[in-house]
Length: 352
Ligand SMILES: *Cc1c(COP(=O)(O)O)cnc(C)c1O
Image (cartoon, rainbow, N blue to C red; front, side, top):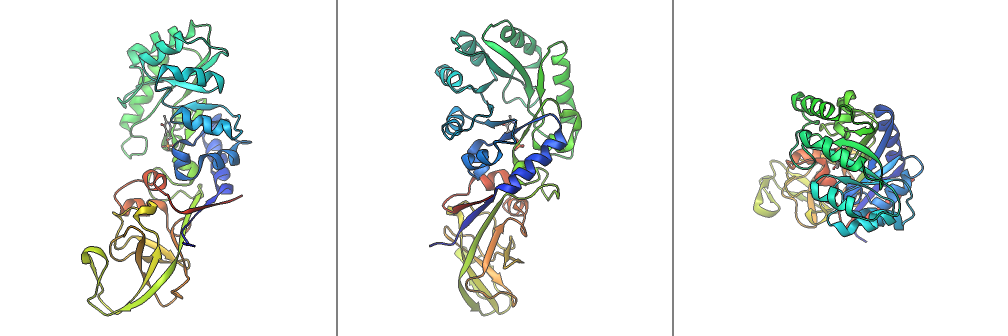
């Protein structure tokens, strides 16, 4: 059997949830959209079910999958519905839809509800992607408030730059939100992972933690309060010694400078490992840091072996405890979110 494994440490997931909830205070949604950022939404939700104040997903299909697997916690649809007919299912499964646009608002008010619904009303406080503009927000709020089918309203917004060193735009978004919410009662939610860690003033009634829940710092680098949930591991299944000045891999992009022991490992871009991460991207071979040499192929990667390595059969960590996901993402010119979401074909194993 091909040895590539995504080891999912559910104990680390629980640790991160509790840590983030303590930092945020009040309630915290565990964001499990996109199959829990590639970790397996049903398994992750079950592992958090007794702790989590609620879950958040991107679409109703993701929410229904959780309901079908026995998840009874609140579930927020972060983007709301994609067509009016979905409100029937929102009602049936007792989901909490975001309302981000006028058509979603009108369709919600037109729907005949069996149960009063809790609505997450989104404000566009400056990201300019979705939500009601601050000057239209009170009108949308009032329309919902006056409807008998609306049980309560959570006012929320999303930040565009909370993970960046420059603080001005997040501060402006907070200010715009607070100003437009003046006089509108009810719960509030602002903070994603980055804001939760960097902007205490954005921690309101509900936090929404995604990437940090999986143990990756949203700022790049590491955060010792968080434990990495996924460990992507494989094995050396081929080994050879190359003479100096030998090219390695597609495009002959790397040449050995000295006599080099090269290991061949079972992982490639078809498994979601980013092809853009090539020579010098770190890997850990038997817990020693080493590096990729040459290009990432579809199914294989070549790595440098050092004298401490056995070679054949050695365990190789692509990311996890020794190599941080943010190192791989940086080497590939992308972010941990994308790298994690892309993992596929690996055997997923779950540890309590
Ligand atoms: C995905 C998402 C989050 C989680 O963001 P992280 O940066 O992963 O913590 C929070 N809020 C909304 C609206 C989202 O779409």
